[in-house]
Image (cartoon, rainbow over all chains, first blue to last red; front, side, top):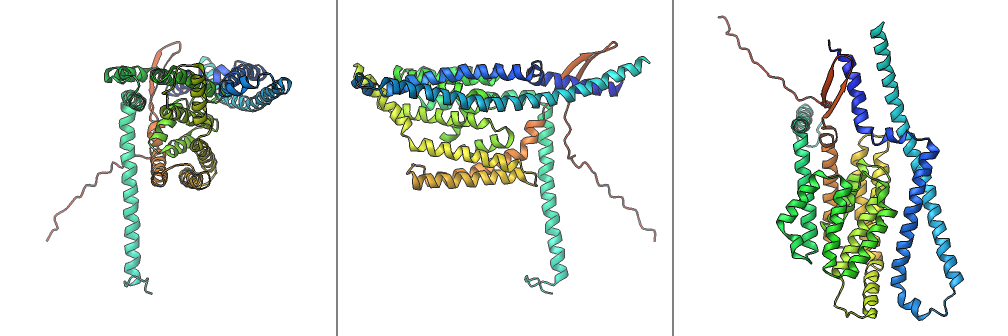
Length: 131
Length: 336
């Protein structure tokens, strides 16, 4: 015989699993530090490639100036500015990323906690049925 | 006591009461229509969503084809239809990728150098801004289209009402996307083929982007509108969503006007006014209808236990029920 209360609980759990399988549930398989580190690593590479792209574009923009002043440019200062800019940009992205990814992780954790609580209720239901 | 309308107090009170009841009936009628729409949407949600997505994809490719008409074959109606059909079924990120590829192909037939620079700019925007918020990936293509239609504030207000703070990055990327394409469209590419001419073209193109005051004013306006709408709608008070929409519209109007006055950006005053008003109306309409679009989605799940396989369709309930009262007048004959 179909038990309505049990089907209701199982349906809610199935809907959560279907919608959050690729989001909250996937996220909470990691520890917080591992997840944040993984995302920050991706961010690091993306910012590096982005910085290289902007470097290429700015070089093309100022190419005439660079070629005409190639011998008189202060290269250590220029390289220092480029490296400083890169470090500052990476720092900003890493700090904002750390805060953002931690919040995302905790939000996902809360959702999965609710899911676990409802799963426990279903387990209790099964135990009562067996008794 | 005279209430100032020349009628006695009691009649005036009755008249006001009747007006209030009429307003309530009017509002109730609108809410009932909303629920009827909601019930139809829930019933046919898969087909309606597919149809709307097809229309959306078709509009996107038609706008790209008509505004960047550098290669006639890409504006072929059959090709646009095919792309729109594909766009109906693919994820948002892939649709955005398709639009970017079509755009770059069009620009290639304008100038391969411009197309190359634009490709680098788009990649930069994606890596640094757009990749952080997956939910609003479509804003990358819709922000440019809404700027073209002079109502970008409406889209920003809607995004601020329903999405998180990180969507502002996609809005910024979409705005830059528009002005890069605008610069590519307006540039004079009649240059020679020598190396110096090529570098001059690159310099001219980058100047057109970097020194574009309209872009900075629009960026500042859309970011301010987003944050004002976002923070007002999160306030714990009645009508916070509606106040957020109106606050965003007013902020957008003021900032665009200030941009015209102080930074000499060239936004048409008429469109600033009309655009802000239309944006507020669209924002309020979307908020009113959002329950239909957001919650009117059936969930189909399947699971099993020891005894049965279950195939369940869960249909969300609406809070307001349609009045289905039927008034039956029973008249009895009076006995004389």
